[in-house]
Image 1 (cartoon, rainbow, N blue to C red):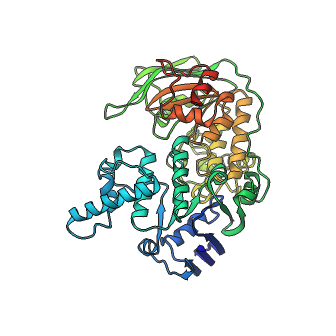
Image 2 (image 1 turned 90 degrees about the vertical axis):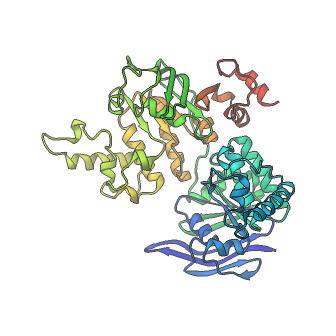
Image 3 (image 1 turned 135 degrees about the horizontal axis):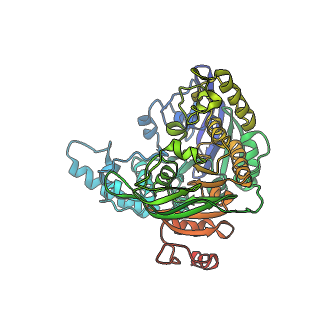
Length: 524
């Protein structure tokens, strides 16, 4: 039986035709993946199905019946639930209170709470969704918060469940647990739609997959009859190299040394706790960890955005401490370039034109300034060259930064920082929200920087990216480095245990044991 059928779905936003005659059938009780580059139309299509938008034309059929969905309330009534990438929980509320929110069942809450608690116990038993129902949502780890979101949808009767990039903040172990839950839902007849850019997840958990490109549905495949390589080519329209192509590193002397670095927040909590590390010229050191475990603060401290509370940073013969801090411009003068984790908040001014964004932080350089006024022609020519070097599309220096796709925005930031030929390159989440074709290009350029002698410190929540690009891998947990391993000896299970601080094979200083011992511990 077909659970969802979309016929000729069209949706435009002004001149942008986001969905073009989209057709899609999804069988009941299956897990179906939907993939595509940024701007391919995936989110718009799911927003139509969940009632955020209404299609300009076309029909939505649920269980064979044409269904008009004009709001999320109507979607829920049709048996559709959605788990968003950013969870919609009220942190000070308990699990029970979050689940019943919006479905209280009347002014007297006691009966509603009792009914919700009883239904939660049934759902927990039926689907294996174990959650402490009286705990505050804000006190739960992200994996359990996600379970609460799934329980919310099931409590409202969802038989069709949409998950948008569900593993972005999960450890590999939590991802495995999620996939077991999705398979249990499928076994109970629930239809699951998985939106993800991670092709390995599509191959691991889905029964079928549909590919969108340029607003159109370009392919449908049974997962058992396709491959990551074919899906990548269908998404981009050309062959894509999925594996990072790099020679063995030839590390030289250390360009960056950090000893006992701590950063204390305004609330008195240590965001970085006694971190020591080094990065040598000619190597990429990856920092793995679930988001929010000190990686952002590490990049901020090493780029001069925040001052150390304790410890020291050694760069190019200069030592930076709490007593002798430097600001971000002084770090740049010492040969540090920084690609921030959030390109919109820290990497670009989206209202600026591309040529203006392409010199941010370096706008005082002599190359861009005359005696009184800035050299506008030189700035435009410089941006045009960077766009050519980094294949930025469209190659228009006067186009507003906001009007580029996420991947091309990221290329502008990378081009700006890499053009400085830095001694140390700090890179945060280099491919977050970036198309698979741009990912290939970004990875190639990071390896080229390493091979040119730069010391590269890479922070990413994508374990596959960390393992593919890095020569050495550090793992952070609650502001501390809890393990270090040679990349060639690493695997996802090993790193996942370390990311959860659950690895038994660590010494009192938190350093991982020899790779062989680590491997043995990971296989327990």
